[in-house]
Picture: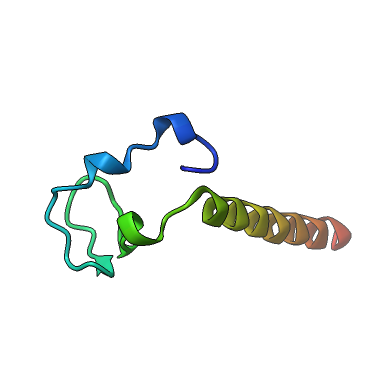
Length: 69
């Protein structure tokens, strides 16, 4: 979100909420978030890397499917 929609990202909304730990938290609320604590680990740069990696993987899979036709 911080990469794709920086104006829609509000980490302050998570501050003051009870999280499982400083490192990670479990999906217990309606947000559906689990894993590393975004207050500590999230960044636009990490988001960019994830988007680019996923785009490469999806593109490779699509090419493979088209080559099998």
